[in-house]
Length: 125
Image: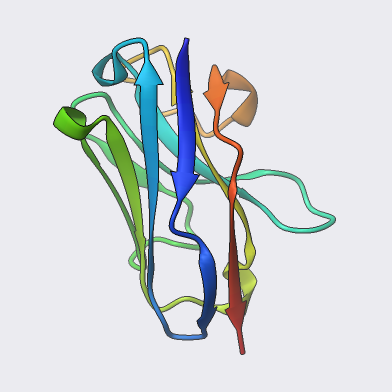
């Protein structure tokens, strides 16, 4: 089982940028597809972005397409989420997650096998 630790969250003004990191340890990171999800207070956890094991395929929620970029560095066992043009509605706890199927393009949280503890992102208006 892979262990995941997110970092990089914080408070930013609308229009600003943040880069989230998710560091993995344990089983071979490069064998997992990865995803970012978020959960705002009172709402269900929602898919944000995903990337296959080698980084060849990325996919995004419509709400973040063109503003967020997911990428990974398998040599560093890390997946990133670069966020620009942030909006107050992006405020949430952001989680990274690992999926055993290397080529998955799943957007369903229940499909993912391991989760980090989350990092808070707050966007002020």
